[in-house]
Length: 93
Image (tube, rainbow, N blue to C red; front, side, top):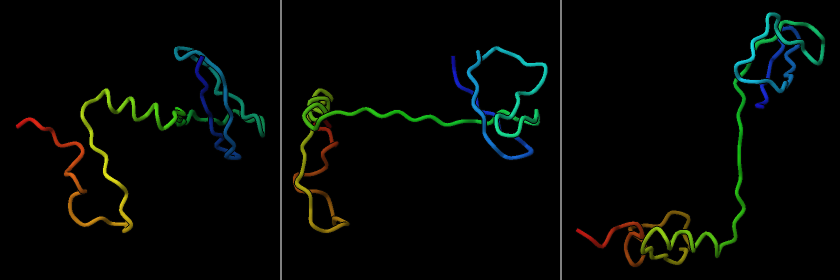
């Protein structure tokens, strides 16, 4: 079941509730901070992260096609194309 967040209009606290998406409530949810029922459902964000080693990432990129990596340059803003051309430019054409 997803977690939905409700913000209290009185105190501003955000409360979380586990509920089904199609679940409907006759009365608004109670604020867990002040106990009032002056809450409104808010749009919450989510994030995900995947941890991979550098080898796994390079192997995945190699499966996508021929990619040429250029060495890092010392200047923060490189001038012109990287040595060896654009790594994403296709050889066809």
